[in-house]
Length: 201
Image (cartoon, rainbow, N blue to C red):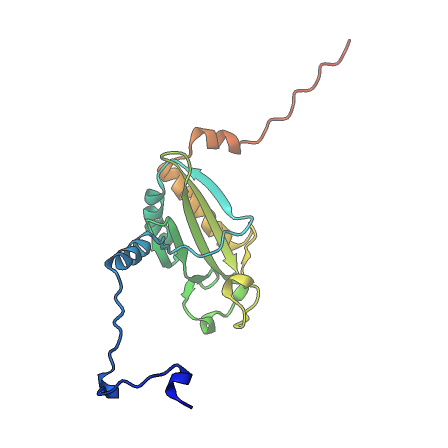
C-alpha cells in the first residue's frame, strides 16, 4: 500500500526531531476572566446548612458586626470556647462543651456524656438598617456514628437543658448591652385576653 493511499506523505530531508510543533497561546483576556471570577466568587466561613427549627431568635438594636464582635467576649464568659468566628460573615460557633464537667471537648474520645455535651452556633443577619436578627442554636448528639456527618446526628436541646440555658444567658446579655427595638418588644408581648362582654340587664 502506498503512503498516498493512507493519506500520508514523506517529507524528504526532515527527521523526527525536526518536525515542527504547534504552540498554543492563551490570550491575556482569559487570565483576566479567571482573576475576575476568583475575585467575585463568594467565600464564607458559615456552614452550608441552616439553623434547626426551635433555635432562639432575637432582634437586636445593633449591626451584625457589633453583635459578632461582642460574642467573642460573651461566649468565653460562659466557659465556652470559640471554635470559629468571623465578624464579616456574622457567624460564631463554639467547640463541644460538657455542661456537667464544664469543660471543652476537642476530640470524640474525650466526650463521655453525649447528652450533656453541646455546641452553640450564632448567625447574625442584617434585619432593617442598624438592626440584627440573631439566631442561636444549641445542639447535642444523642449518639455517635463516625460513618455519618456530624450535622446529621445533631438535635436541638430542650429549654430545660443546661446548654439552652447557657445560650439564653448569652442572648440576655446581648439584649442588655444593645437593646431590643420597640417593634420587636411589642411583637414578643403576649396578646391580652379580650374584655368580657357586658351582661345584658
